[in-house]
Amino acid sequence: MTSSKKVIFRNDVPKRISEISLKALSFYPELESHTIEFMVDDNITKSVMQAQPKFVSMLGFGKRTYLIKISRHFKLKGKKIPIDDLPEDVLLGWIGHELGHIMDYLHKNTWSMIIFGIGYLTSKSFIISAERAADTYAVNHGLGEYILKTKDFILNQAGMSPSYLDKINRLYLPPEEVMIMIEELEKN
Image (cartoon, rainbow, N blue to C red):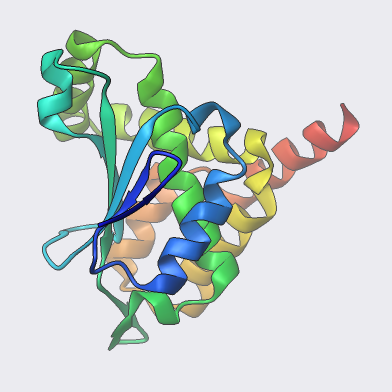
């Protein structure tokens, strides 16, 4: 494993993903003192990336650590390609969104995280709230343009199935709301 500033990349994380992850982390100075591990996973279902606290660290032994799982492959217009072949801006937005989840987790104690996990597994309205919170953290940390590029890629370029597109449209902030948030931030 290679580590830098409490960031751990498992040996299977492609160099390009490591570089983009570090760039995304630079938008979140609050995460500097937290340990975040990135790994490539062949067994992610129903998503491309996932962010979660490491279970053992939630048991109260030391400081909580976080894990971002990244699928090894992505289906682009029906063809399986390595995840690191996606455009940099798209990956930056995607990883920035996952880091937004970690920002949301920082404010939750172990009991709140357990309730969060149960809610995420059982309630669509809970998922919507969590996914929109992650997008909001990313936009508020200066990643709005990358979030828009990721959304455009998923919705208009990737050739995703209609059911996946429906899921994205139901659960995540629509591009129009992201643009409004960016405009509001630029005014301030």
